[in-house]
Image 1 (cartoon, one colour):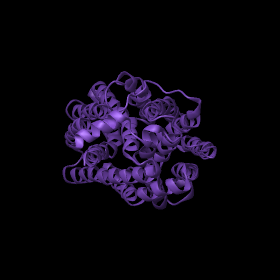
Image 2 (image 1 turned 180 degrees about the vertical axis):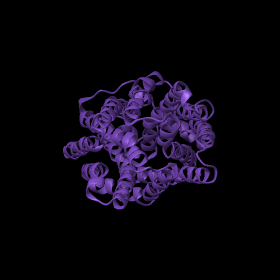
Image 3 (image 1 turned 135 degrees about the vertical axis):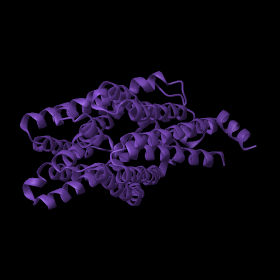
Image 4 (image 1 turned 90 degrees about the vertical axis):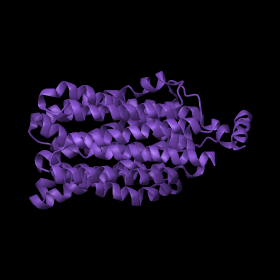
Length: 413
């Protein structure tokens, strides 16, 4: 019963954060464009401070190694809430760019600190032989929750106009509620799920996992920075359109991510990540060259389809987490390795964003940016083909330590 309550609390916390994330993701790029009137180069440069906390995740997680992961999640959710409420109250005009930057970094620190924690806790609570399926179901639930955030944006902007501050306040309140749920989760986690976390995990065994994470960082950043920018700048689409596309993508996630999780369990991570690389190549080419191949109306539809596919494919990256779980030498390695992979991801993504913005501005076109992104997707395909799994059956997953069993029996009584 204790474990069931733990799972419910974890799912509730992740769902609340997904609602807040849906609000932020579907408004942030329009917020930058309409409030601060950024060019493509300025948008790329913004990624240096925005993504820097992601680069520092391994350091932040290492500094908090003595704190249980659920409480780290509570700290992360609190930072997200502070960042969003600050953006709503103190960064509402182009004259407040400096304030916006500071508050965006606060939001980013919370968001990035949460990434390895959420994956680690997900794997912690999943059964070893069905990790893909369990992560798929969690991804489906989080997608469903993100739809709520997108609907909030759609309704607010449809009824009230460009009300970025109102939607950010709603997101901040929801993130704060998630922090409270995380605190309760930390209090009820069974002792067998409380692990000492190493500060840094560097093992040759995890090299391919780290390589895949770095390549993903490059591919991810092109989408986050320039995918929405294509729709906003080249096709003049507003926050409502982005919210609608987010809703479509997350609905696909609700329906398909559990199936993707089962496919990971049956087909393996190698096949799924290679398929992801192949599809991503087509997505990048669509972003870059749709307007050259199709009529204006059909080109917009093609780019919208690319946006939806790109957003959905983020969920497929759970295959990297299950791959790590299968090859990890100990459960304690997973959290540290995930944190380091997030830092490597951002070590690559920050210069990619800045380079992309400079190329767009220098050439006056987005084509070269997405041609490079297509090359990165091909690298994903090639690197994934090297995946070979020699699974480690870890003692702590077979039988909990004697003291942990006694604690669990005491809790049951």
